[in-house]
Length: 173
Ligand SMILES: Cc1cc2nc3c(=O)[nH]c(=O)nc-3n(C[C@H](O)[C@H](O)[C@H](O)COP(=O)(O)O)c2cc1C
Image (cartoon, rainbow, N blue to C red; front, top):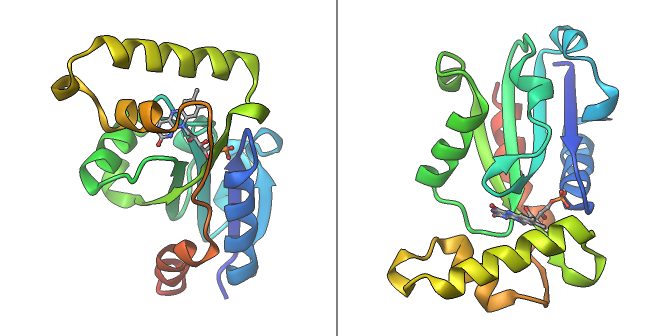
């Protein structure tokens, strides 16, 4: 049986929730990324890292980007429906080019509730909305459109069933 660690960084809880569900399915241990030292990760056969997406970057990914993992699987959690192309882009910002072919990434959808958002994030979303409104529609990113459609509302796409492709992949290793 493989020794598996699920490491996560979660600001509002959706990544943590997915990390716990994944760990339950795989009988793995979960750790918050702040409590893990990169050097300890070599003790695991598989490390699964989950981070929320913030402005197209994976929250806290440094913990694993600088570690020597035997096998690394990454899941991102964001509001957008991320395509394979977007996912490749996000991964390329987070990991050294020589590591990229060894990592498998999955994207899961999260949640956003403006009532629970911190001040800095509220400010960032207001800037995204303001900038998006100024741009012509054909220059909008999908995140711009998403923010314009859902600004100020609560949106929740968290769904346990969507972890299964990742779980099956790790079981197949
Ligand atoms: C300031 C801010 C920036 C965000 N940027 C993105 C983004 O670039 N792409 C995306 O898909 N979701 C984005 N989101 C949505 C979060 O990724 C989503 O709320 C996710 O569920 C957060 O996970 P967490 O609460 O576990 O950290 C953003 C949210 C905030 C507040």
